[in-house]
Each structure stands twice: as structure tokens, then as C-alpha cells.
Image 1: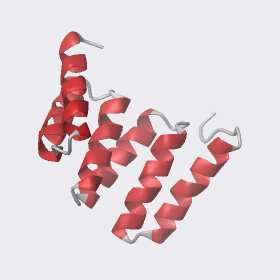
Image 2: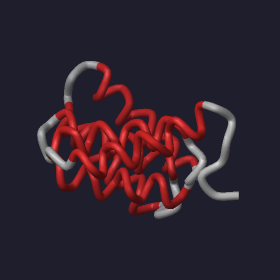
Image 3: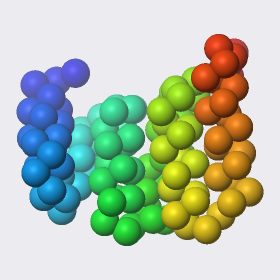
Length: 110
């Protein structure tokens, strides 16, 4: 991870911690622009967007997260929460099912 990426990510986390969501979102966006394969950036961006009610965009970030790390339990759990907030229960249940598989030691993608 580059120094710039780490600095932006740390700053974004600081803003998020004190409830400065728009500032955090802007910095998380910079992170994923610098490194489109940065899983932690996509996941954090999605959760920050979810907190601000930007559900559709949050889901997009959640989908990017699970595509980057398909065997990440937290990513699938978060995506399920995003779908619930969107009212898309079938997709929420599917994401929850993947999280359950992972929680039991299985793999979504081998």
C-alpha cells in the first residue's frame, strides 16, 4: 500500500470515528481511485455510504468488496445489511447465506 493511500485511509477512518461522514466518504473515494483493488477502501466506503442513506451506491461498493474478496465474512454480512436497508430481502438472504457458509468454515469461492 502506498503512503498516500495509507494516509487517506487513516484520515478517512478518523473522520468516520467522529461522525464526519461526508469527509470520510470523500477520502475513501480517493483511496479506491488510487487503488481500485483496495478491498478495505471499498468496504469502508460502502459502510459510510450506508450510514448516510446512500443505499444504492453502498450496495455497489459492497458488491465490489465481495468480488475482490469473495471469502470475506464481514463483506458478505455488510452486503446483506445493505440489501435489507434497500428492502431487497431475497438478495439480503443470499448474501447472509454466503456469510453463514463462511462462518461455518466453508468457502464461497474455492
